[in-house]
Image: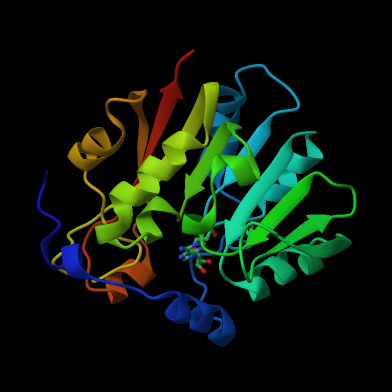
Length: 234
Ligand code: SAH
């Protein structure tokens, strides 16, 4: 695959992610939701209603509320309990908490209406026997937040969670990995193909220039978001 430079060996621990939430270093969170999900939602849903949609490494992504309000059932996973509690609080959604018998120390926070279930644990603790399979995935700030050494493990797990005839919207980022340590990490297109290639059809839908002052301060001179749709067959 293409060179990802010094990022290959970079590791961000769960503890460091929890600290980011505690310190409020959550510049990745998008208050208004992601325009690319709005734009390509029809491709994800493919005319179907009442789907099961998965949000890996969900943070407090507001898109979970959008999809639930449209009648889909949303499942997320996130190590930070603070993030999940902020999600429910910021949308004034009542929820209840219960342990997850299969995963020691894990909790499930579920909206009282029942259509949003958020697991507080590491994604690597999940399996299809615990969470079932999904008709759709919104992966933004997820694969790009996974430590580069764990990408194959992450993708292998995600593949086992895909239902037949499901779609997976994947947002990656592109910038010079020698100039910023990440996350988000740069994931080359060649790596997307080698990670997912044998299991689905991959199409690049759009590349968006997302360069801002934040990226300039990181020392970068370009920053793109790259959206793919992965289609899993029958
Ligand atoms: N997808 C969200 C959050 C992106 S930041 C968004 O678009 O806003 C990545 C998130 O993954 C952080 O909230 C971090 O706490 C969480 N995370 C990191 N490693 C994880 C793991 N192994 N399992 C579950 N969540 C994890």
